[in-house]
Length: 284
Ligand code: G3H
Ligand code: ZN
Image (cartoon, rainbow, N blue to C red; front, side):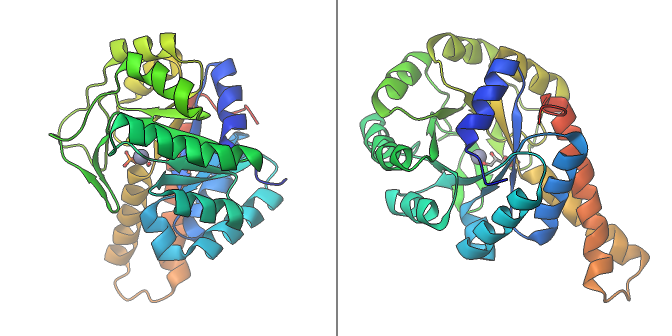
């Protein structure tokens, strides 16, 4: 199958009352873990590349890996740019073969965020690529993007409606209390705010910073109307934990396959659990 758009998967999820998982792609082991989980769970899936992922693997390897995965997979696969920083970067990803882009103008004043998103939307839609935007500011650290607790800002429901009307994105990432990276305390999600946004907005909503959010809160977010959920940190934790365990048990091991194989398996288990939690298992 060719890569499908994120909008296609998220709209089906919004209609079906579940969320599709989006997992950050940095190397072959992550790719194989995510795709194997999606096949075993019969789930649609979103692969995405962050700024760090693009720098580490290179855009051509990211696209080639995702294309091979989509062609071989029996479930729908999308490839999304995660937290795209500029119009130029979004265009480059579209030209290289991404089926979706996120353009993150959340650091900009509202008017500038609208202008940037609309500019990307006009081109992306002309070539069948979907666009995710962000309003409010999600806290925490994801690769090069660092937003302190003081800078983080919740999404205003009224503003969200105006923003979508003006910028026309296909999906909206909302700031409702989650943060990127490992949580220090227990995250507290503002479900009232999510309900108010949902009531005013008719495009699929996205939850970033979902690693470490308790299962019950994720279920509630899906019930209210989150249709795409991003996971990166929990894959990192599973990967590094497995590598550490392997090397502790066999400090003289030099075969990368014996070191990375268990890490791939550990990540696959995390993805399978998330797919069941998000309700996208069995939806392919
Ligand atoms: O864009 C990527 C995700 O929002 C990652 O969130 O750090 O909680 O896994 P996470
Ligand atoms: Zn994010």
